[in-house]
Length: 125
Image (cartoon, rainbow, N blue to C red; front, side):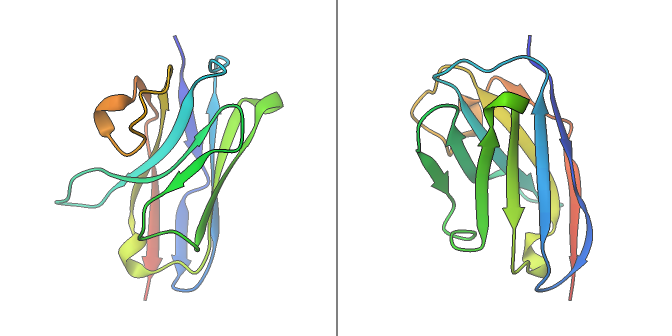
């Protein structure tokens, strides 16, 4: 069993930055994919970014590419999401998730086996 705990959310003005962290209680498998999703009120949960637990492969939604960066620290079992140039439309609850055996579909909610509890990010205009 793996538990994921997010932190780092908060309130920031448009144009500002935040860094989210996701700590995994157990060590993901080498083939795992860690992902970040977000869900705004009244909207479906959407993919933001993903990174393989080993290697250099990372994935981004078009809406955040160039502004957000995903990274990991294998020694700490932690994944980060650096969010720059934040916009009001980035306001949402952000969730991290684990796809244990990398299904090959990083953008699909159904590919992930474990989810964190979420952290609120609010961007004011």
